[in-house]
Length: 408
Image (cartoon, rainbow, N blue to C red; front, top):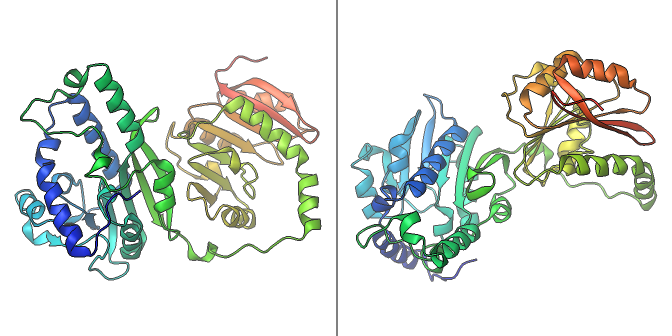
């Protein structure tokens, strides 16, 4: 929510110049608190990891400040822009002055699709219109490019600050003296024009960008920062749904009764949190994707089913679908927190091996009711999975699997 209204761009620039002098970014990056330095260091590392620049990529930092991140960019040809002249003068001490430009994030002086990699870290809360800045980032990112944005989780930060101060631990936790960086009690009282959390960040990202991944910094259970990797969305999926007749809707509701029972059981077993990443192998048209409140990857070899799933969840940037079999992908080890395996036939050994390797938490197997339980147990055992629980509905057999789980 904006607390300051500016008459024009010049008034905003004057206010911004005052704030960057008052809250010296140089002293913040050299903060005396090890905890603050750890959080900021992890935020920077994860920003670059999600950006994944190649050696030939042109990389732009929107709101480069004094060049602290730009100097640490691991690869690519780096460029930075900022609205403040004083910040750019400081940045010139760290990077080539020829790669720096003065400009407003809400009106970027570049042609459409000019940049392979763009990142904007801890800037959106300071600009007059974050949506306009994100729309500009969407415009300048190349078709196969990547944009990474990060924001502070302001409400949680304010709550933690209040608890620390009330407990009298400010000096012990922040280790600030009279000459150190002056961190106000609430940054959104003055320097931060907007208050972000995960929902407001995702709401602000334009439809032309698909959120491929969101990470909480420093930990999932302590999300003081959110870092989001965005990729240009496929414009072919941006079509309006056809309205269904009342008869079709009633028929669909009647036929989904067994699927609702499956979902209830999976929710009981998995208890997925908003920060959990879910892998769904055999996702079909995305019937079970609603079980994932956050990052979700659905795989299915049926291109028509995947197209329906993409259309169904086109407004949810956290849901991704690919035409693929898990066995054919090089999925990162232990990347997903929970897994689903669903199909009309017993999954193959290669697929189960790939899913078990990529998932560090529980995996739920959903099969037709007539599938042999002993055959499923044998296939799972070969993949290093044991059956922890099993249940049956009218049409499905459901098994909760874990690595080296005890059989029941």
